[in-house]
Length: 377
Image (cartoon, rainbow, N blue to C red; front, top):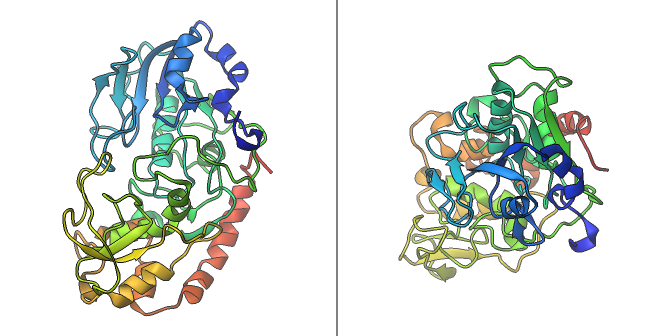
């Protein structure tokens, strides 16, 4: 049993095994797709379900690939099932991939942050299910950051793999609720025309979860979010990925340590080194100076003070933000933020309070839309 008796949908086999009976199944899964510590695919096979293939997201089906690394197809050594990567050459299954599949199943543990790539994976999988005329069952899981909504809202001009829809950085929805929003707001990019009532997508909800729950993840959601403290800080600290500073990859505390070799040498020092799930990143083998906020507690809103502090302290401000070109849409920081507004505010010396005030009206508008799709109180 999970803490507080919260049961993810996958644990409630009685609610979905009957829908898989005598069917061939294709499962989108990774190590977070588990039932009491046993991988979902292994559990389904032991229960007699005919899993014929599996699909893997960023970090791969068994979850040990680097962030952003393109992942190839393979045969799973443990089960002998063909694993089709949807994070590499393609983001959607093809007709060939699902020709022997009767029903698709989706089960990934999201962290409720717009730039975490699993919601993009969900969207593309839903689009493929509709276009390939395959029924899809989504097994919902609690959102560990589901108790608040915060941050700037994405402008579609800045849509990318780290944010495709006009939602805030922290959107306060589970995977199942977000799936309902994608359908209801007609945000799915399908070749097939669809309406909310006709799509063959079923969501199995969690049990005993609410948007006030503080759900402790039983498995780390990806290699660089090893602790609940990193899961809570990730929405605020991932912005450093769009800067020249190290965001702590290659250290014990990714997204809780940040810095740069050119900062003041009296600050906290650390040296990033290659490690599993972070084989290549910024400044490996170089001493960086900055901050260690592992012991700082914050999780009820987005925190900008460290980003503002780092910008202020950085000697070469013109090169603080990583850029692939002069256009605002080419700047990775803007893709994470969802527009160029936050970058402009930082450069202009706006305070955290001033920046947060600029989010109020858009967030209020988003919350009205969100309300229509909630499955949990």
